[in-house]
Image 1 (cartoon, rainbow, N blue to C red):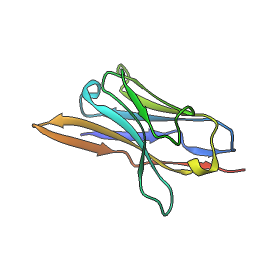
Image 2 (image 1 turned 120 degrees about the vertical axis):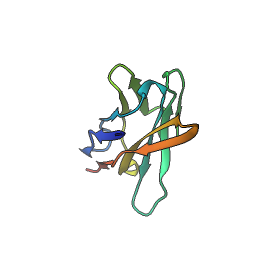
Image 3 (image 1 turned 90 degrees about the horizontal axis):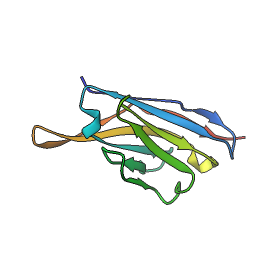
Length: 120
């Protein structure tokens, strides 16, 4: 079955760094676009970063551009989010999402999320 599992969340001080990882299985990872979303308490879930299936194009939210880097390793079926210069407003649950075509329809699968807390 399809599985999307995030890891790497935790507590970090402002200005620090953290790396999140997402392990996927149950589908052809190399044909799936991957994205990271986040949701803070009382706020809407927002797209943080996305990467194409081949890893040749990436997009970032303005709020994280220059600080976060999304990457993927199709040989290991993983996608990562390197977060630098973290700010308290980056505190949120971070979710990994896979998107791909199956049976002529667009399918999306979400991970359970991992908590990132930026605080002194």
